[in-house]
Length: 380
Image (cartoon, rainbow, N blue to C red; front, side, top):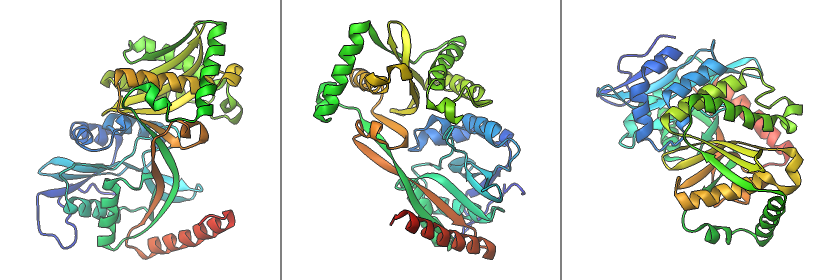
């Protein structure tokens, strides 16, 4: 796959200062870090894991031998749009391009400069059309975000076939005003249950929320290991999905956390009872958004809902300190998180067929199979 370094022009447009560059290796992503990160800062993407170094780390952990093809649109040498992609195989067979994101870490996003116009997105669509993979299969797309809507419009202008299907919602909590006023908007049963459990726990000994935002390098390793030991006690140990039970996972998170801490984004929250860790949360704060990524609690305290108590005390702390303006819960919106949310956004799958006969045929077959599957499940 050759590197597209010259001006690749969208159909129907005259020569301009725009060019499309394809980054085909992990080293190339790292070399582009300065411009990539300036674009991230200017964009409306708040995930700090979408910065170039952490995209490169994701590729090294999850796709070290796979073909990468990060697409970067530049205007006069300055990145104004970028999308990191890597190959994966559907059902272990069909190679498709996907964002550098998975259940372990979300690192892939469409970065777009706020000054970018339709011509920029037309060039990004042209880049997707030129990829050698039969389909571009993006599983974790915030469909309603303006940047993604702009890409969908560009794909339509280019005549590329797409399939868009909603998957789940992610919850948000807006931080503003007094915590007592926020809590008053929650259900009476929820408020009473939390206060009762906090009193029961406090009767047994001191209860403390510890929110850590500044770290020494040695401290990061110790704190993360303590947190993931709590996770390993849970059901995740039996399913083989705990960090400590997955080869290489702890090393990946340690490396990621050290970089996040160096940038000032890392946040580790601990609920301690009599000096003992009973619940934790691993998250990141950037651009005024706290991204809650991993949470766990000691199952020995399950009857007291330590995860919910940690959430209550953390929201209270944020209301006091204004350390963030919003909490993004990252994963699918479930009952435990829904109790705290004030808003949500949709995550969906976007499947794109380049303008080739085989690609269009594959997309048509997928649509038929997906529709049949949804009928069986009773979905619309």
